[in-house]
Length: 413
Image (cartoon, rainbow, N blue to C red; front, side):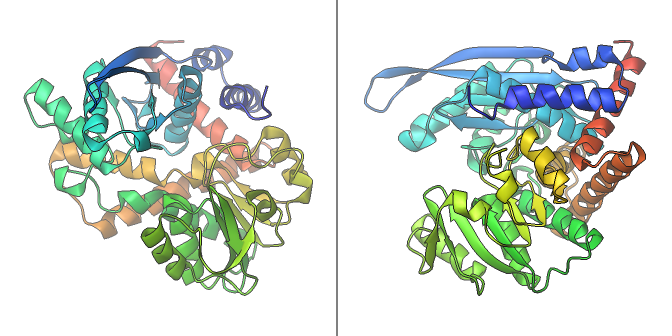
């Protein structure tokens, strides 16, 4: 079995936080499995006239705090267990951030790059037709790996064609012209930077002159890197799926982002090459794992040299590695806080759609920052009150306490 497993890690955190926070065992049992799992197969006529079947899933993990929301992941390897584990993570992320929503997650086992635009549009529309129940008051899908504003626009249109009325709050992460929020595409990266900045201030670590490495130079990592660069931090290394580049004097992040837009990634940018594995162990002040899960393990955690690790990806650090880093005095900003900027904006997107009243980018960005940093401070305070070193456990305990209260009030316990 691989060292990192979303379901195992989530179950372990659920048990640890439940015990540390003295959470009702019945609530922990309630959260051990999702409330509803839907699995279905999508038939699709391909451009060449052949027909294929695609496995698809939707998990409504828990809706004690509100309708389940977010995340439609389209990757070839996705399965129901991964969707379940991500549904639990979304439940915690919403509750830790005081977002009145439950955890939802969906997925289609497909490779979008192998589909024509017509094929992919048909697949997205078929997925939306199979979601039951769905809608603003019960379950709201959003974007994730393999999906984007265009795919969500197709899903919204399909929902509205089925129901016969406009419902912008039925789907998240759609284009602004259809009721999406301004700044949604950059919300996660901006949230990573805001949490990082707060953690650095607590550590008395000035960003100006500090050094940083970013693993994963996609939509999230590139935004966080650009904001660090603008704050005077030397971003000495970044990486993509095929490896990375580094420069001790600091990379020109804005030039690198332009290169990425022109060439489809950082490959070919004139700088020294570095592997993803070596990047994690670089001599730097700040490390941002923004790519995939399970990259910091018990094997490389003793060699991590950064003073601050900010989890821009979901689950980049195993629990064993987390303990090693904490023992070594490395400050950690956990994923359920650091990368929650997008779920904060999704909450605002739903509110705007329900009220048909849309806010400007400055208002949205200010509210997102205030709410995310409030959740981070609450996580730190809870950890301190319970004499825990881990902000991760503090965030999970806060989330479980809110789900526990809602479940008791509803009479579920």
